[in-house]
Image 1 (cartoon, rainbow, N blue to C red):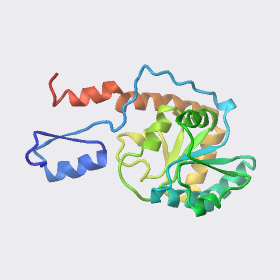
Image 2 (image 1 turned 180 degrees about the horizontal axis):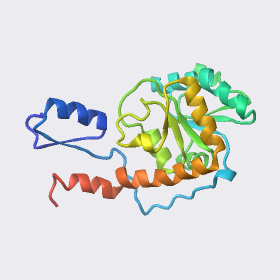
Image 3 (image 1 turned 135 degrees about the vertical axis):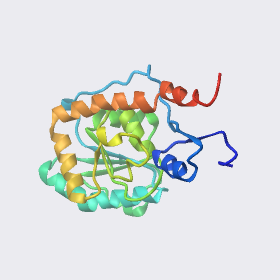
Length: 222
């Protein structure tokens, strides 16, 4: 099917690289898997009115289970030493017994919540963490956080497939370094504001209607 196609549209930079090596003569475009309206206004609460950490992801997906368990076991204790009052909100449908068992004074398991409630968490929490250690494709949780202009700390797996993303979010695959990146960003108003502002730029550049049309117009005439 790829050989017969005039152009190939993929949603991940990782996929594009693989296909470009296999089919060097083909036109291969990366198009947004999520498209946001640039005109949609997002109310951004300032740094000083925010607190706590946020994880978003359904627990029918094994990478989310692994990521939360790794974060709470190997990363979060280091953060708690620096910020003893901090809380981690874990939002997502179908939490497993092991995930529910994490509930404590510092870890809140919400289960499924409405989109309206989720927006409230995006506007009240200070950082999103996405400690994914396996899985593939562009991660909706990362794109959504960028849309709501809340800074993100994730892994190389979490950042997979997104162009230039290393310039817009913090990335680490090591537990201590991951914790240190959270601590630095959580405590620095200047860095937080810069990341929040740059998130808007990223969404407009890669996940807006204009960005999608720009790619599609190269191959599909009106």
